[in-house]
Length: 272
Length: 272
Image 1 (spheres, each protein chain N blue to C red):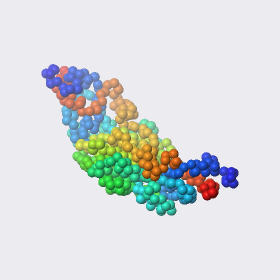
Image 2 (cartoon, chains in turn purple, yellow):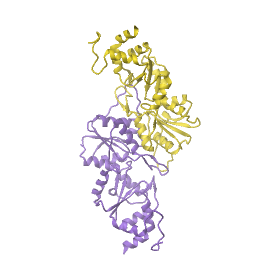
Image 3 (cartoon, chains in turn brown, red):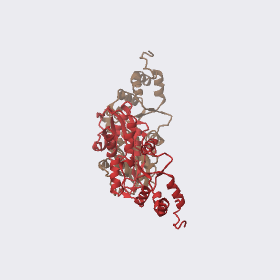
Image 4 (cartoon, each protein chain N blue to C red):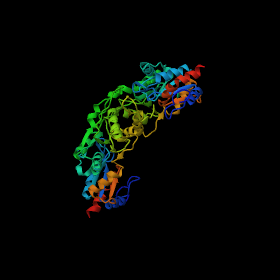
């Protein structure tokens, strides 16, 4: 017992340490999967902790490597879980892919082939790029017959690979042939996570598995735009104007347990 | 000009060197893709070279990493190209996978999950193993919804991954969950070729791409049974009883050009 509060569980900070830590930073960067939610289940303590941090005037930013959704779609997901989060507070690896192309002056007359889901297509289109692939190629089957010739669009100048539950051999060949045969074609990975909690009960193959397959076929490493690449972090810090020494990255749900535990105390401190 | 024959093209052996080389070995091990055929097209000079070597009493063995067909199916393919090759002369990576399990006393009550095509299933069944997966899982789509729970067979004791034109997210998760959650489950790759000439006109993603995806999701390296693993070579040499110093591996079509060029000369030498 300290300050009339119960001792924090082993491994958590003391009330004083938590207080000085929250005081010392201007912004909190939250991972989403496993921190805010698991699948579509909100993690306990999240709404209270977010409310408290907002009251304390902290800037909140939500970062996810999961490229299946756009910022707009994630904002809706937050809302469906009872949390008000604006698109501007959300940084997804799908958005990072679009911003990477934009900041690197990807020629507007070139197209982007997408191995991935709606989120990537939506962010690329919002950034003004013409896309091919994505979910609509999920139904395209290859029949490997002796004289079959696989056609591809020679104006594809970048291939973006992210998590894709409709991954198939057609997309693998499309991505391979663009990267190998279209001069200067970029190979961009949203992220390389080997697995992820795509549903609440289980882990599933992550974007890293699709990236590994394409990378193997072209014998090249991709440009990674999501975590832990420096691109996403640099872009994010510039966008939300946080000095890089003044934020704290929250990568597991311990913070919420901590804040919940200490919230009465923190409110007192900041309310004085 | 030497011995009345035209000079061989640059980089090829002289007639004398070719003669002593062919004399010095008892067996020729041929790669198939790119040596015997490209897609379903026979490579020029193959029938003549094979006929000559058989007349010279050489043992011929045909090795392929392409796991899509069984030995029986490859024997039919040779026949369709006008070449008589018995099943006993053929060593495929699909057969290697079955032999690896057999020689390692894989328990008959355990099942094998297959990411791959008919060839692997046929060889595993011939070796007495019960299989799941393969082409029939090619139509199974996953819809990643929040509460979806992916069921798997806990009696799967090995996952074999080979080239699979019907590769999908269902198979990726099935393979991942067996390897990660079934105690002692083996992870076997037929081969790791990044690409292959699956059709005559183009290269395509090879088995290595499916292996890379599964390997990434389980963060483990597979046991490789096809080329260039020592397993296939050791097994093959024992099976055909060739001392390892008395064979020559043919990995490109140059030999055939050479033999064709020198065949009159070689026949003379061996006919005396």
